[in-house]
Length: 222
Ligand SMILES: O=C[C@H](O)COP(=O)(O)O
Image (cartoon, rainbow, N blue to C red):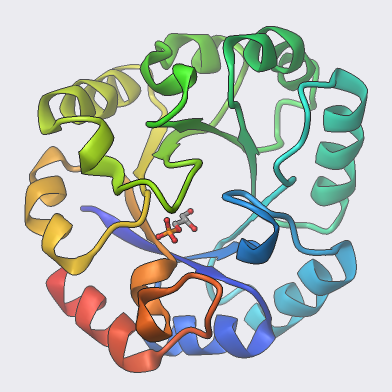
């Protein structure tokens, strides 16, 4: 079964997402980039609001390919108690520099590696992340102004990604300015999660507020 990931920016939106049937509450500041991070204090406030009713993921931010910065951000985010920590990999150099950091983390921390359909990491073999001890892999888009996931990768490539992740025992996620009309194309691929932000917001703009009716429509379509 494919679950619904909803990206939220604060406790009010987290509550709307829970009431609207989101399965995973993903914490993110869209103003600060594709994987913009919320402050640790905001993450803690939202975790208190969610109160264990849903699993929660948080991003460490759109960080440069620097192992020390990445390690510090992962450890600080893990200390908040989120269930999943999402780390974006934007280039081969980024992978080479920061994937070893992930491999050295405590085995119980659930790391989700995020690759970008519009960046050179799009076709990275999920086996690299399985070997580093990741819990999951996700495909998203880095530049939200330049198309949706399916503008960059066709369904055959996405199917291979999802199936490879499954073979390796990794959770898989697909996102990237997804719209309701993308769902019939992506659902047959059976990823663990489909992720949404823009489509849930006023005017379809990810920097606007989450609109309950849009979430209801996406939930129904899933
Ligand atoms: O993790 C999923 C993303 O937040 C999706 O955001 P988006 O639908 O605006 O591309």
